Each structure stands twice: as structure tokens, then as C-alpha cells.
Amino acid sequence: DAGVIQSPRHEVTEMGQEVTLRCKPISGHDYLFWYRQTMMRGLELLIYFNNNVPIDDSGMPEDRFSAKMPNASFSTLKIQPSEPRDSAVYFCASTPGAGQNSPLHFGNGTRLTVT
Amino acid sequence: QKEVEQNSGPLSVPEGAIASLNCTYSDRVSQSFFWYRQYSGKSPELIMSIYSNGDKEDGRFTAQLNKASQYVSLLIRDSQPSDSATYLCAIKVGGYNKLIFGAGTRLAVHP
Picture (cartoon, rainbow over the protein chains, first blue to last red):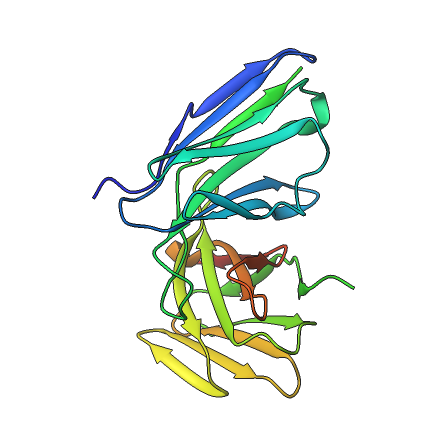
């Protein structure tokens, strides 16, 4: 299995532009998570899906952020408009189920820089 | 109070020593606890999970859980320079399938 695949690996954009981050979970995994990591705040859970349905989006910082999962093999995280404080590494992760023996498998992350 | 608390470090230990990493949590209902290792510029990777009070050993790693005191720790025996990384404690929030992470402890093992 190729693991969780994220694209792009790096994104540099100007303030005010729209940014779209993409994720392909591991086939057969029912849960998909979006995390953001910064030095100041660590690894924060933004939103997670179960069977393509958003379950908890309480970590989404504000309305500029939105996430979708149109099918079991694809999810997007969109920021519109982007701001410099959105600069971070964004990780996507997936897990096969909710049981104890269902660890998170992380993608390689997208490093976002907003100038 | 944060849900998961860790000392940010850095924790510096000599090669061959035991490294002890600690974590406290606030959610009394949590039943699943994890330690992830993250090398600089890389994604977190799972190294240990623990669900019951007591110790769980896997090679040079031992996870310890005390639910009454709400802490979980990770011991690394015979520390190697390759163990130098940030170690993230994570708990599965009770009743939900979401993993909340601590800020991480940076470990430096020097030869």
C-alpha cells in the first residue's frame, strides 16, 4: 500500500489567495483526519470524517477553512482567503476503524507558507 | 488546562542511558493512549500504544499507564543517537475516535 498521499508537498502563496490541500487515504480506511502543526500550537485536530461524513469540525479555526470528502478516496482542505498566520504543516491521516487497535497513519504533510 | 500536557524539553541524555518521557491528561474517560515519534521534517509515526494500567514493553521501549493519576510515560532503554526526535503523547478522547496530541517532548541523545 502506498500509504496516505498528500499533495502538494509544499505550497507558497500570497495572502488573500485560495489554497487547496489534497489527501488520498489508505484504501479501506473509514476515518480521515486533518491536522495542523505549528511550533506554537503543536499538532491540532481540525476536522475528521467517518465514511465520508464530517463528524467533528470543532477544530476548524474559522469560516475561511472548509473541508470536503466527496468519496472514500479523496479529501480536500481549502483556505479562502489565506492569511500569513495559516502558515503551518498540514497533515492528513487515516485509520481503519474506531477500535483500540486502529492507529493513525499520517501522510507526509503539506508545508504551507502564506506571504 | 490543555487536554494533554508534556514537558517540551529538550531532554538531553547520554548514549546508552534511559530516557524517561512523561505525559499527563485531563479526560478521565480516555481508554487509549499512544506515543508517536516525529523526526524533524517528517510525519509522526506510532511507536507504542497502551490501554491498560501498568507497563507494556516492546523492545527498548516501555510504556507505563496510571489511569488513577492520569499519566502515561515512555521509557527508552539504551538510548541511541537515532532516538533523537520529538515524542508526542496522544489520547483518544473518551467516546470519540479522535486523537488529541500533546505538544511533544524533544529528546536529544548525545554520543
